Amino acid sequence: MTEHGQLLAELGLNVPLHDELSRATERSFQRTIGAQQNRPKAMAYFDGVLHGAHGGRIAELVAARAAGRKVVGTFCVYVPEEIALAVDAIPIALCGGSQFTVPYAEKTFPRDICPLVKSTLGMAFAKICPYGPILDYTVGETTCDVKKKTWEILADDTFHVMEVPQKKEAIDVELWRKAVREFRDKMEQLTGKKVRTERLAESVRVMNDKRRALQRLTELRKADPPPISGLDALAVMQGALNDEPVRFTQNLDRLNAELVERAAAGVSPFKQGTKRIMVSGCPSVMGNWKVHHLIEAAGAAIVVDESCTGTRYFENLVGDAAQDLDAQLAAIADRYLKINCSCFTPNSERLDDVKRLARDFRVDGVVQYVLQYCHTYNVEAIRVDAALKAAGIPSLKIVTDYSEEDSGQLRTRIEAFLEQLG
Ligand code: BJ8
Image (cartoon, rainbow, N blue to C red):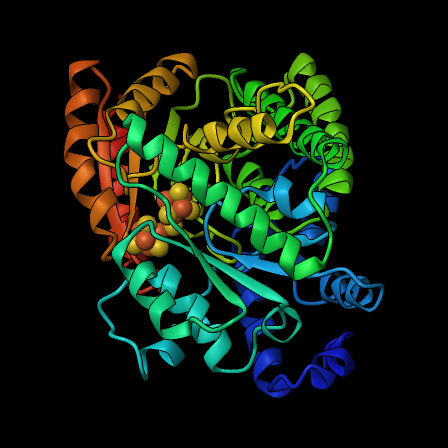
């Protein structure tokens, strides 16, 4: 039994099976993140966040609930965290990145749906998700089809679905602002507290500080060689979706300070002139290090991620709004609607983002990362590829799941792509 086995048992989890999951995750961690050389010292904190996601963080959330706070599970970066924080609720991302739990979902759900959804569901179905028993409320959203249809099955009184529009016309802006106000109402009902302007301004500040620190980390990756690997930057981002935000930002500030020194001294896991890659597409959530590891093990450096475990999570700040609740909520809604997810149509802004990031980070090539059966990113890859081609930037599309079965084949394709970059 692991250190927190007693707690997991009290939460009603299948502890022996959870121990198996922990061992599988640890093996994967050691083979990827843990196998890297010359890592920043401050990464120790973020390694701890990953390791504590099913241990220390759970104990912390249990204690917070005992003190009267509510825990709110989410599945998408479209859910405005600052509104939950303004009523003392704790938003937590629930998306699964482990192959271990996928077969448990496939017993009842179709095999041919995206691995992120299967991994998440499998975690709950196998009774090894420690977040399930401590959730007070869950928020889904109308983004991709598999999520929308899954919410219909999971929905109950403690499950709310936010309506994310499909376009970004004036009518959609109104619809989304209404959805954000409705989310505010749900958070107030859940906690019995009112969202007030001062508290909301404070939680906007907390979230904007966190975004600024993530932006700073990303800026530092512009150096040649970058002072941090793409795999470590991904680990930081994965932690961002789980950790307490103020503590996370303090530790990220520490990491950023170390990276400034490393960049000045030319300290890096890579040699100068290492091929620079952007990963673009689906998110890589906690437990999923597969493609980042393959790219960097093949000798390239990932210098930027255009994904929801990358720039889409932190690129835009919530604008300053007068101390007026409606204006604050509108500013929050407007910030989130700038996230260019492939669930939107026509989503030309994402093509602009990809080209801009490729240019700013001086990438040699782009790996389009598509999770199997994620139709929106898979089809949109055609337009992304064409936009990159027009800008003279080579790209490689990888469609994969969480299993290791295709690793050999992917390695060969990635190596061939890097060779083609010269
Ligand atoms: S804003 S990317 S977090 S929806 S990978 S479940 S899209 S089939 S995760 Fe996402 Fe929000 Fe968009 Fe970002 Fe569906 Fe695709 Fe699976 Fe996905």
